[in-house]
Figure 1 (cartoon, rainbow, N blue to C red):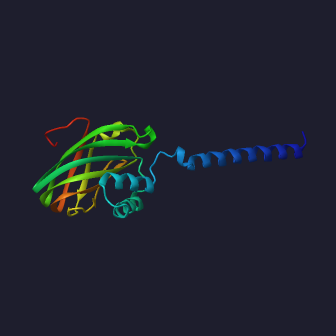
Figure 2: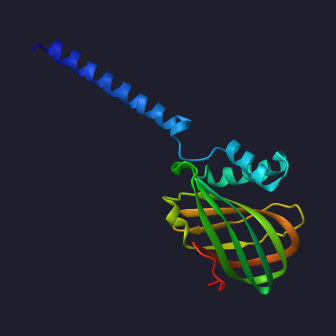
Figure 3: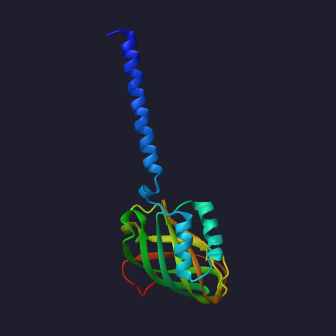
Length: 196
């Protein structure tokens, strides 16, 4: 085999590899293969859930996307909380995960908090979930710090994290609660009366 034939075969093999790599990269960018939600998808789902204007929800979602990127799951639910220095929060909802074809899993959450915090509220919650490997991984404790005031029809956002999994609950509801607190929420398969 001549040197020219070897070089030509090598160039042909390299071109085939490059074509395969380009095809794989295109498949990875294809939205049908993506296991995360786009900003537009989340804005629409959150607007429908909250019953709020798309513009109002879009501002909150845009901020979270700018800080955390695209989520691969979300939770829709309701919760109630109250505090006078020491607080409690209870809620329940449905977890949707894109790579499972939007099948749902029931989720309950409860947890204590302490801080300079007073008041109470009932909220609808739409929680963006990041880096969730499977639906079972949601059933953990997630610490977080909250320092937003709850006002009628306002949307508040805070972050909770356990390892690589990050939660970004967005809340809107009725009531008045102000101050800063620190605590955690335990996400479980069944409702627990004790918040620990």
